[in-house]
Structure formats: C-alpha cells, structure tokens
Length: 176
Image (cartoon, rainbow, N blue to C red; front, side):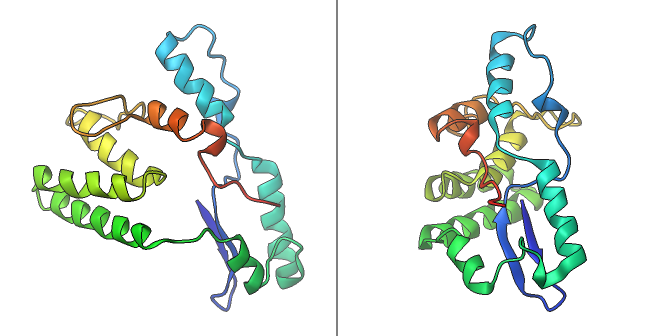
C-alpha cells in the first residue's frame, strides 16, 4: 500500500496497492506445481500492478512536484478515496485490541477480536493475513504465506481471494 504526501504534509495520492518492482512471482513458471499451489499462484499472477509505470510516476512527481500530472488536488484525492463506513473504524479497533492481546501473550483472547475485525471488514487483507499467519506458522519458522484453511478462522487466503472476485480485485490499483 502506498500514499504520496508532499513536503507540506498534504496527501497528493490516496492509498493505492502499488509497487516499484515487479514480483518474480508474476513470471514464475508454475506448470509443474501441485494443483493447490498452482491455483494460488494463478490468483497471485492476476493481482494488478504496473511497477514500471508507478516508478515513473513517482520520479515525475519528485522532479515536478505539484506540477506533475500524477499529483492530485485535495478534491481529487477525496474523490478517489474509498468511503470508510463505521464498520471500518470498528474493525480497526478490534484488530488493534487483538494485536495488543497477542503481544501481551494472551493469544487465545486475541482470536475473538480478530474474528470480529474479519466480520466487520471482510475485504481487509491485513486483518486476515495477520491472524491466519499466526495460526498457520509453526513456532520458530518463517511465516506461512499460503495461509491455508484452519480450525480457528473462517476462510483462507485462496478461498477468500476467489470469493471476493479473484486476484484482479485483491488491491486498489493506482489509476495513473
């Protein structure tokens, strides 16, 4: 997720799912992968993005400042921003309560708060991925990025991506 903020602290681009480097996952040959992994990777490859264009837009903005065609006026930023219903604020509070409990060692107490964040804001991948990762990653191991179905939370990364429209809908891609 990226936002652009100018030297005066003014937001000149709203939150967008963007990157300045292409992921090697997009070009990886997945033909020999097991079906479950191949299906997940097919959705990953559908995630929108044009890192070279986004990088060029940042360079243009750095060179031209407010005169860059990529720097938006405050009214344009507001118009492009996604509406935030009350459920989004409630979900954020639930997620943070879960985080605090988890970090204090009350791991089981965190789960209901994260479930509620998922219910209130089902399109928020940060809430889901954090909770799924804690459940599916073995102690002392690197994070389990596949985030398969589990007994603690409904869904999984793949099932939820497909249910919410596929990899094409995974991020709010920049409109350059």
